[in-house]
Image (cartoon, rainbow, N blue to C red):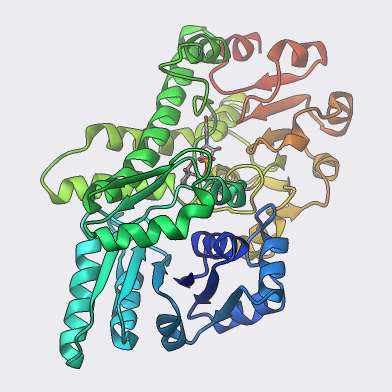
Length: 446
Ligand code: UDX
């Protein structure tokens, strides 16, 4: 099937690559000529396991192409994905200017029936706005053409995006058109094996499903972080509580890991956007607002522990920091907890020696060269000349470090762990002072 994807960001690129891999004929459009040129040379703008070989092999086989030529893109696709960004505007609502600009472009160039698919995370009602924009543009140009607009939200996780798109656990189709549904069932049939994963519903419910899924997951995390804070104050250990409640299948073990807060491109933005959408229809989304507030405070937790330990003065300290990305297996630094910590440490007069397996370049791009930040080549090098260690991301490579080495390199035998990677008792055995999230027992020892 001929497929066009507008927007070569995370969602668009992965979607295009897996569609090409199963044999669809895909053209990707982006306004960024530099990005297009680089992709053609095999340079993939994001770090995502498995994506580079997938894009390269499909480009070389002629199944996917990249261009800035929007007219060609509109002409090419029977189905056209809109996968452009929806950044938060000043009040946290999703900004639809890129989505609506693509709608206008489609209307400008279309000469026959098109199925327009909203893949970007967009507020409820956006499909109607896309429809209206296409209609308005067609009228302005004096054209008549038919089209369908479908909501088909994406549920991929960074770090597992290729697998998530190849083997989706559900494919949500929000549509009021039987013709569009038939076409999309055909489009997705290579991904819909084993059992039927397609769930068809009305457009607005599909749009809300995406937000509800992310907000539910963010709620689980903020809830656990609140329990962790309580556990600490009450002298309980959140890791025992986590296992105790996760064993109830109605609760489950997933997404109940306490830590130094959630980040990334989705949870913070989507929780805010849905809360703003609620406001716009006169409803106060109290749970969502609390989820956001708890997360905001949780990102400051490590700094609070550190300040408390040093009686409010960390000026002149050098901090070894392991983990910069917002989660493992990505170089994405958007809304990462490490950023809140580093910025607070710098403001308090401390220096940071940081290591991350993938996000060093991205950190350099964001913060540039500055005396209070040194990016080190290994996790061991980050310890050199540092006073204590802080962990912000649960990379596998941090889970079994050489604790004797850590102790010998640091000037103080002290670890602040924002992802609860180690057993407090073991840390005591190694003679390390260990702070984790919600493990009051360990904190009390020191
Ligand atoms: C998320 C959703 O999982 C995905 O379905 C959606 O399409 C996009 O948003 P992503 O942002 O890639 O995906 O990351 P995810 O793995 O969900 O983690 C988000 C954040 O929550 C990370 O900062 C992670 O460290 C944190 N987290 C996750 C916790 O703090 N505790 C947990 O138990 C799980």
